[in-house]
Length: 261
Length: 271
Image 1 (tube, each protein chain N blue to C red):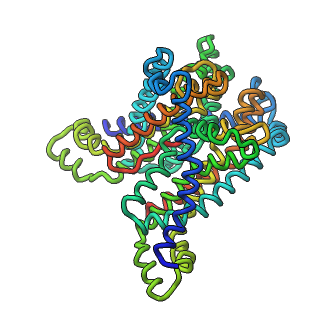
Image 2: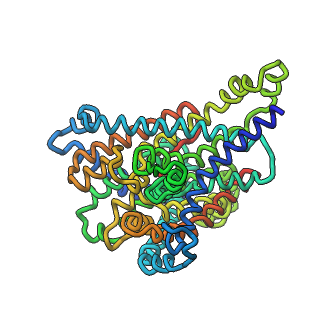
């Protein structure tokens, strides 16, 4: 009897926490498709707000995807070889480099954005273009890619595989493409999902780095929260959920697969 | 090409990118912070200037409150979810963890929907008591936002730590006559210590530096990121905003580094 009571109260508490997280999301989705949120859902269901958001903010959404995939490309090209190099080289220098590239996880985005602005703000062409935001996103997401790939290297004894291929006469480049990358694939995929998800939702850096011509999806979100009616802001949030939730689900599935291995 | 050279070629792009877009800018930030009318003492302004010090204290108190509340909530829920199997458990876990990567701005908006002028809590309280309760735009709204942000992350860490606990220890304690509460207090909670330190540090550092949620709830909440933002954009006070953000960065980094040395695991904040 007492056990049941404890179980019920714990379950009740956990349900309450879940409600705190889920109810606002449900409110936001409802508001995004309601004709008039003040009058409630009885006023009718509509997609007019979603359409309006699309007409107003399609550019922002497109730019966000451009930046997310460009960030992914850079972190792949730069991060995957670097993870291999750091793992194989080892030693003090590698640890220092790893520490430094991990720093952007600890330092608030606002500080990194100010640093970039104060350094490159004078370079008009660069400052005005979306590449400026790309630079910030690359710095912020790089540690996720590098560490995700290095985690795989730590578990599959890449050195033996690498040396085996080398003893058969394969050049470093061939080995990298045919031995290292295929073996690192789970880490590369997990890192890629992380990088794209983080880049699509990044606000702290982007708000400081953007210009009126280089607004991203979350910058547009903040805009709509400040200046649009609640239904439009909710519809925009709804569009964001539709884009980000599949990525989150994929990430979760990856994490579970990694655990059961 | 030798193996050694190939390794260096692998590392070179990362070194160049990090130097150009992180190390050089941070050095510049450090220089600008010391280059204002106050000189190097700008770095002490965060403590010596009463207005900045008040904001710093505000931010630290808020972050600490968020951390403690999150740890308590996540431990109760995480222990429960890991120790019981019941229908709907997987759905419940999914509900508790899916907001993991919501940006701060979105979390701010969700808090407005919950406790803002047209919010759910306002509507309910107006119907029940006749008085509309609105607190989204106050420091309590920000607290709720940070709570929303950190709960999923900490629950995941706690659940993973509970899974690794040796259940035999608890059974031993119980067979020696310890009450359920004593088992929790003397066996389970101490064993979860490293997980508390690690996830608590992340929650704290994130709450210290989070900008998006405060920005959306806007108005006049006095926290460090908002202060830096207004000093930079409205007052164009570059030196002070640079010095303050270095201070904020050092605090966040130090908390995480301390937690890492205590818990032995990798610890990182999230935006």
